[in-house]
Length: 527
Image 1: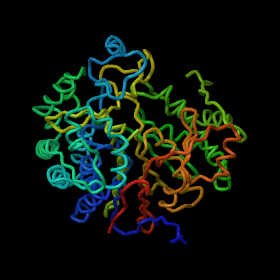
Image 2: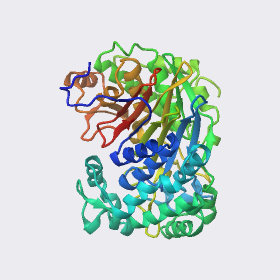
Image 3: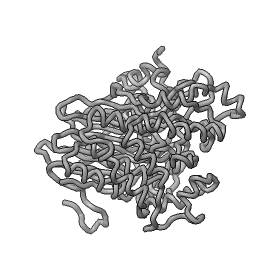
């Protein structure tokens, strides 16, 4: 029985169709499309287009995306909508330009050709039922007429305003009058409105070719980028369907996108946790185990994952039973350890949404510009704010994630899909940069091991062991924090929430249960 005195909210339940996003205007746009006969893909694109306008810190047409799509009765498909580095990009070229150990977050070299628009168009062409001109209506309206800033967006905006403060085009839009917008203020982006209209009418070519591409290339080269018109033209058809990876967890099958995404890290954490009775562990034990498994998974991710063409077979090797058994055995429940690579064989900002339509089609969809406001670089002609995903590249020759011509960087954004007895049961996802793989595992363990509702599993206290620190939310008990410190963890209580999430569970009787993280502004709605 739900505790209505908990100051939280229960899951949302409905019987025909549902959408869950992290922004109310995006949820409303997608729901409207569903009610007018659109399918899951239509609703997802309408929602993400709106969120590209109203949540500009987290997503946009200048970013990348991934999706898992499960047509009713069909197999799960994975779409890679991540962009590629310019053809002239290489470790040698960037070192010659003065970069030594890393690509700065605001560097033009952190900007790969955005892949989101290519992915949106590919999804609609292959599985949608409505034209882009209809799906972009609400987004175009909000860009032209303005939208009201919501509370979580306002908080994030204030914390990240410095990123856009010294870029003339970006600051003019996002810091009108030199001030950070407050809750309820109205923001417009007329240049982006024109770009959205062009895409709605001309498809991906209107973004990757012609005047818009020319303006973006001129801007990027003007700030020192290596981008060319050919690089952008190649991005038009850059989104591609790929084979998803998967692993079992207590009788359920979890699907993730393959590298260059970090989905393998999420599966690796789950397979390690599967060897423990998560339902009976104490709070401190659960957090400790999750942190230790995450350390191992992220250590392997950072060493081995990059563009799919440069890390073939790694996911299959890491998810093999010999690897899992060896890695699981390295965890000591009494103390915090240091991760080590399994080498026995020879061989930070995002939006996530999901939709289930009346026909039973399900989509798990994630779109990102990486850090808040991405690179902070905006082309004034198009209103496009560029991501900075290329900062994930390494400047180490021979590394699988070393920057190179037309390579894709390792990505943190990962949509998820759960199947039970061969039936699609739940599209789900977790936002929060590096946290996402750990978040997938924690959320699924809450739902499967602790039998929580979707909303309860999302709202449960979060922790994240990464970079030598164990971050915990203030809702983690003082007793658990003390015990974790006794085991050697460097515990830090965070000032801001860890991540966000959405999910929709399809019950066998057709009931839909939806959840949308209370750490964000969004909601799950259906009919």
